[in-house]
Image (cartoon, rainbow, N blue to C red; front, side, top):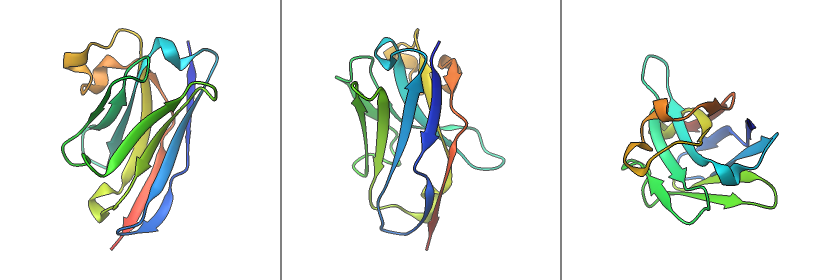
Length: 126
């Protein structure tokens, strides 16, 4: 089973861009659907984006569509989330997750994923 480590979070201003990374070890991400979720205190994890096992299909939550882009570098065994036009409401801990048995109709459900990273904090100031 793979292990996931996120990096690249930080403090930025509204309108800035930031890229967070999810590096996998102990196996290849090509066997997993990979997703990004985010969470703020007291709220349930919110689906942000997902990418299919082959990287051929991408999915986005409504609140980030047209601003965020998910991609996969198979050579580096890493998934990226490029975040543009950031807003204060994007402030959250961003988690990377991977799952072998994720089906398309359920990929927005965090319970479908069985491997999680530790999270990286993204803070957007106004």
